Amino acid sequence: MTILDSIILGVIEGLTEFLPISSTGHLILVSHLLGLEQTIAHKTFEISIQLGSILAVLFLFSQRLLANKNLWLKIAVAFLPTAVFGFLFYKTIKGLFGIETVAIMLILGGIVFLIIEYFRRDHDESSDKTVDELTIKESLMIGLFQTFSMIPGTSRSGATMIGGLFSGLSRKSAAEFSFLLAIPTMFAATAYDLFKNRHELVVDDYSLLAVGFITAFVVAFITVKAMMKFLTTHTFVGFGIYRIVVGVVFWFFA
Image (cartoon, rainbow, N blue to C red; front, top):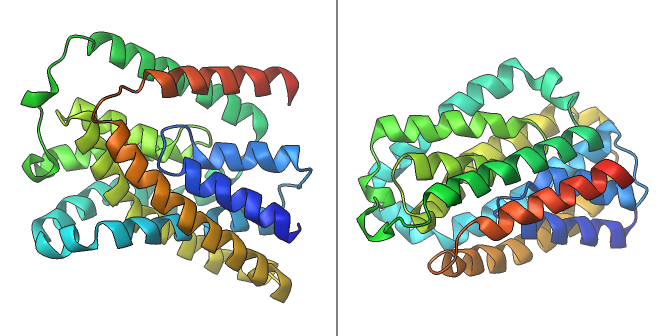
């Protein structure tokens, strides 16, 4: 891997981590196009640069988190299912990383978004809940939705946003909670993966990690702000169509 490869993957990570189109899936697909082999070290790189994206969210929502301690409880409860499943099925999840799995899950996720938006076409979001009104039980349900995102191509953001919509949140509030839930989820995934594969990384790998990390942070910062504004006036239909198109293309040509 070169510095340019690291920058490209950092851009992809920062751009897709908080969009419901699967950052992990896109990293796998782009790595395939760049001719980068999915070794343990490379998979660890893909997961590790996600921390840059998470720090962008932490920076953007720091005041909100400091002002609302009850919000941390909701985030912790929602994080619990993924923590348990991730720990128990770590090796199984690693074995799922592949082009075919990503393509299938991109397509299925896109179909789910289109179905949801079809039934919400006449829905008035002014009556929907905000994140502050979310209950502990509903937070847990969103967390259960997040466990599906351990399958590459599903999208952590997509799964949690869908869970948020089912919990009665507006699109914008569902996205907000998804972003906040990413903080413990992705930090834990990164820390655990680095620890498990620390012997696979060499000194040169850390310089590439730094470049990917910084790139992901900057791009994610811009993406999160844009996404929050976008969902005040738009639906998830475009993301659903995009997922299906990309999934089909890679299914036939990857």
